[in-house]
Length: 207
Ligand SMILES: N[C@@H](CCC(=O)N[C@@H](CS)C(=O)NCC(=O)O)C(=O)O
Image (cartoon, helix red, strand yellow):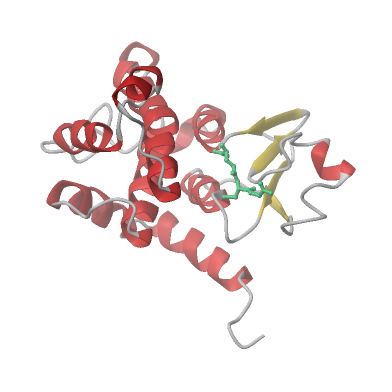
């Protein structure tokens, strides 16, 4: 694809997920760092993402927000990277990508905020409860190196990032399955490049 790709991010954000995906795709992109606060809520940036949140990308005339959607979009936009299974084999890919961006994200966020739904609320909450979501995912990964289709995909970039952040911030217990799942990804060159680029953009502690 020849259209310009603009990546709106902040190094201390979920933008790290998209940066990893961009590096996996070997994409040529221009980044715009969006500071938290006024810049992120400015009219210019709200025209890109009316949520006033990062990350977002603009590819030619197309704007995509939401990390999981961006990962899926990039996998299709850069087919040479082979980060999406063949169309006929996408069941697991869609299933777990959306499981991660829906139930898993909600479960981790509510857990971090200290909100524990009661039994009645669990029937309404798409994720049920935190323990259930984590158990289902842990069981699924018991005999899998990758979440879908037997090879590394955009679903692993997104899900792997949530598990990686979760272990790092203590919102996901580092079970044997979760640890093994992310340890392999941390060795990927694109993961390393992406983390280095974001680290270099972070304010130094003595600044
Ligand atoms: N559902 C969005 C979440 C985006 C999000 O919440 N980003 C945070 C940073 S990790 C943000 O921009 N917060 C700033 C704000 O809301 O003012 C996604 O997956 O991309």
